[in-house]
Structures are given as structure tokens and as C-alpha cells.
Image 1 (cartoon, helix red, strand yellow):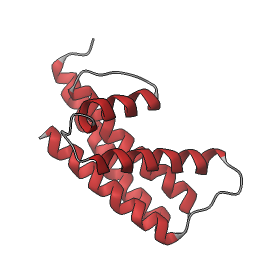
Image 2 (spheres, one colour):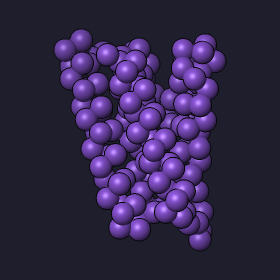
Image 3 (cartoon, helix red, strand yellow):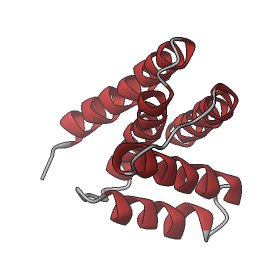
Length: 130
């Protein structure tokens, strides 16, 4: 079990990762690396979500379990607007398509929308944590 000081440091680290990933996803999008940008968009949200899970003492190494926990604890209970569950689900599905499906592509417009959603999602998680 992680002690409280280390837990707080890890939460801060995960939030920093999320913020840095926003910058990286923007850079990738600007340079037309859309599939990789979509991957980073999801992972930015994932980093923020792991910070939230740590705060709530929920631990898993499985993405599906983490998303399920988030939906159960925050979306189903209406602690957060359901749009955040949709944003996360879509980001996960798009990341999976981009990483594993052949000939998958995304347009700059699609990636820009996803980037905006990513920033909104991360800001909402930060709001909850403060």
C-alpha cells in the first residue's frame, strides 16, 4: 500500500503527464501525425483518470476496468455530466482503432475536436481533485 505522501506525489505526477500530453497531442496534430495524436489524446485522459482513481484508492492495470469504475462512480451517480463518459469512451475507441486497425485515418478536423474534448476532460478531472 502506498503512503499518503507518495500517493499525493503520484497524483500530481499523473496530472503533470496529462498536461504535457495535451501539448504533445497539439504538436502531433499540427504536424499531421493524426493517428499518433489520437493515441496521445486518449492517454492524456487516461493519466488524469489514473490520478482520480488514486485519490479514490482504486487501483487497476486494465483500461476497461478503469473506464468502468469511472462510469460507475462518476457518470452513473451523476457526479459528472454524462458527456465526460462519452468523451472517454470515444477516445478509447478511437485510440484502439488507430493502434490496431489497418488503414485507419483521422482528419485534422476530427483530431481538433478530440483535442478540445481532451482538454475539457482533463480540466474537469483537475477540478474534482482540487
